Length: 109
Length: 114
Image (spheres, each protein chain N blue to C red):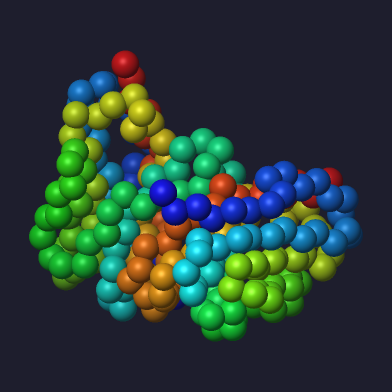
């Protein structure tokens, strides 16, 4: 059964700073890896997915995947107070998603 | 934006009572998922429907929950006998297909069992 370790549990960065989130997976069967963001009182929303080794950039967000190490990371450049939220990585094995424990990001104005 | 609707938003039950929550998936989506989230921690997969048929579910759902999708536009998740440990946010998501497709989540139903 897939296990997902996410770190750090919480992260505080200044406005305009860089936030870095990390995940490691236990099962090589996942094909797609996702980053979701959940604001208070809402359901999670997908930020981006990655399935090839290397980096994928979408605006201020860059995801990195190393399949050999079962490692995924997310870097948020020029962090904004509106980025303050709970972030989850997830891997899919078939259809369902297995989520990490989450990183609570706080961006200080 | 995709819109998955969940009702009710809040549900309070006494221990031993039955609970039911509903989900309206995004139009055109054939896959529906239910997850449980406790105290803003990781989402725990509960059950997955494809074209209204349950294809995967955890043992807890088989034993104590009831889940159906009577139509492509409505799914429901029920708890036959609520326990304190069932207090959580129940999230429904839908996607255009199974694996690899983005899942769109509703706002959830927050269940409190007293």
